[in-house]
Length: 394
Ligand code: F0G
Image (tube, rainbow, N blue to C red; front, side, top):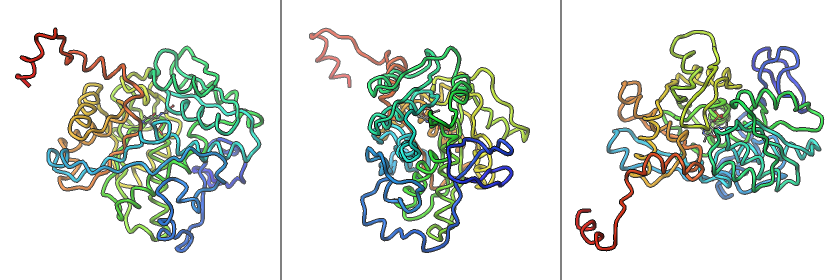
């Protein structure tokens, strides 16, 4: 592990920040052509462990994660005049991209002899950690912000047998508490500050290249705690360093208007200032102080990418559009990538003709309440005798 600030190297052990300067840690490899043979890897089915040679963990626990569909969105391509693909991470075992991080992270917990896993979560991380901990015979305790977690995610954490602790306050508060109790001895922290999580999630970048057989111009995704954008960028960089890919994509992160500290930093060219009271309908990314903000902004600058924010209204509109034009149902946070795409096309930041992959991070069924609320005026209440007439009007 290497500190991204002071460059100090640390041997494999459960630490979350650089003991010398408190910087974020990342797993560093010396990569040279020949370290990974994509042609050989392609003989195995498309999933995360196809890239095992580039993952610093033994597969101790897996639910067959990764290998998610990359859909070409022909209807939206026509409408938006870009070449659009959606990488649907909602098709992972617990319905979000977190499973990629957890197969690696929980495998590491087992390797380190840990008995208890923990995380703070807006929902998906807790659902995923609970599932992988159950399968790995580990105890799991998750901290969630009270009242602001989508029901599907809460249901998952509960049914997988995690101890669910509901904290008065938001995700940022829950994360502070988790840092205090994760002492590195018994309890293993599996938020995305744990660099092994990102080693799993970087495979999204590998898969996009693997499926397209080239690098897209741009990748757009929602940003919450800012781990995923950092991880995917690392994946693309590794394929580039290996000489597999000849290009790297522009990494483009989307936050919601009510919680956009990284967007503010990017647009105002100012220092990072956390948002004290984050608020958005996209509860998954309702985060005011993203722990990996520095890795994320580095990814955006290094890749010549962009950061944009979208309103709740734009998110809900994009969620409907993606469902109704392409048959892909994603949760509100995930729809922010589509909302961001539309906004950046309107602003002229994205060129017509660009090839873009939007990452939809979580399944729509995670948060049915938001959908029913936004669509309930579309329900037609009718008596049997009215039906024939209604059908005629379709
Ligand atoms: N999309 C969804 C559906 C998420 O659940 C999250 C994060 C993100 C995007 C943002 O990813 O944090 O890596 O920038 N959810 C976390 C959780 C915070 O607790 O489930 P990020």
